[in-house]
Length: 180
Image (tube, rainbow, N blue to C red):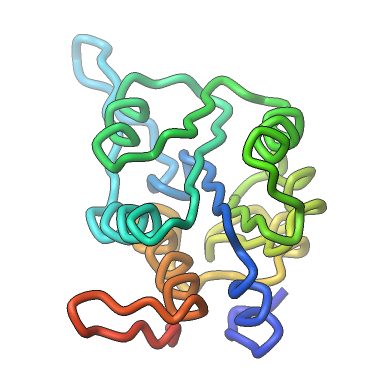
């Protein structure tokens, strides 16, 4: 595990065709917020959203696999153009294997960003296992790279920027450096 971007991490990122994000604790801060009438709320980071949209625009597949079910997640992913949304999946590995088969993508071409122990089986298989800064210790140990930002606070954008940089993608003349 390292929080520093190494040549090895950049080389692995260059091969990524699919990035999969967990949701709670990765795309959100992991908090569960409820209104007085029992409705659930989640906070997403707009910069993470733009990074995800840029990946999709530049033909890098994006998916989410999460253990919980939420209409909010479905709506947010739809607004970003994420077509591969799998909710209520406590056995994430089975979903991962089915998605890889459907997209005809091999492990070394997949990045996964997680934060808790149910993410470890995918992290053990994929080509670029990433943990957010505030992930569970066992997840930090499995990660090839640990973002400097916490889940819901720009960690996903860091991953997106590294992928955009490693694929030499420019946006409006801006060249992503991959520096964190």
